[in-house]
Length: 477
Image (cartoon, rainbow, N blue to C red; front, top):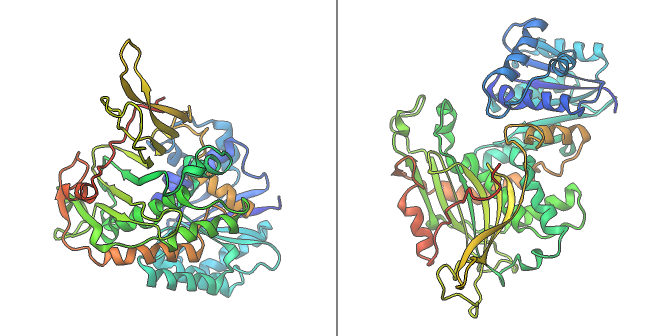
């Protein structure tokens, strides 16, 4: 591969410290960083190169739940030889002149710009890059990585996408939702479309309903200033959970390439039916006392909704989605609940009417499992639920299982858009959630350590169903 520079705007920020720097180390240890590439960190703080190396090292050594394995000195030395730092303010044109001179002097015609900074600075970055021709692919390739959220509603997302396309071509833009880099989420496509066992049953004839849960047992921590402006629906519902649903329900792409895969995801998102009358917003008790939270805040820390996919394949199949903070468990999963045939044998025995459930466990104990009934050993016919499971037998805090940021950085280096969002996809997501956000009023208060407000249970009880209790009995290390 030709030489290139990964330029990270906001290298001293929280995102870079807990996600990007650990991912770069893991890539270095695995030999995934091309020998002729460098990392150029950008921030306002004045540091020399030794200071910056120490910042890198300290970011790896601090208590970080995303990166708890050994730091090998020889690996860090190799990485440290690649890193450079330039301080400056992103709204000052003189800074970009210094940056461009540095990159040209080093011979880096190929560049990846990673915006790990506030969205209100984007226009300054783009305008100044354009003034110096730093966004133009004249003598090398230029790529832009930008984090979700892309806007905070459909209108703002459309404006941001127009801004991006003013300065970059669509094939230069990599809109990153880190859930698309998660191993189990990507494995859904392989599981469904490279096997002929389950895919014929992923439709209205066999599926009773679908549940998607993204629960966290902790609160907002130090994110009050950001979270209070966003809330649960926009923070994880508009992006992560809609992508989970798309992967679990999309039709098979004609080929495993970006355009074909994205096309099928977009079809699902565009056919989702917003039901403002079927959404519940909640807020955990004590949220208003969190740092940097408005004491009169009506921000949702929990939501639960019902929806349908308006296509023939899933006609009439209800989908229930929930997410929240300070809930009973830390778990993210997709549950495909199958119908019970009327003539099922043993249905009158204890637990004999339990449905079969296909579970895609995204975190923490990642894997794909099938909940099914088996006979208990003994002289009598007694059935019990068990799990047929495929698991990743690795330490979740290790690095053998690729971190999503590691995977998506590698894909960007390769120029592969398959697991990134297009403008059309982002806008389809906002088109679904905007009508739901408009009906958010005063949220229902719920106690920490529960599954959220009781009103969320009623969404399913009205349909003679109930939320599944996520199990930790499978894929245990």
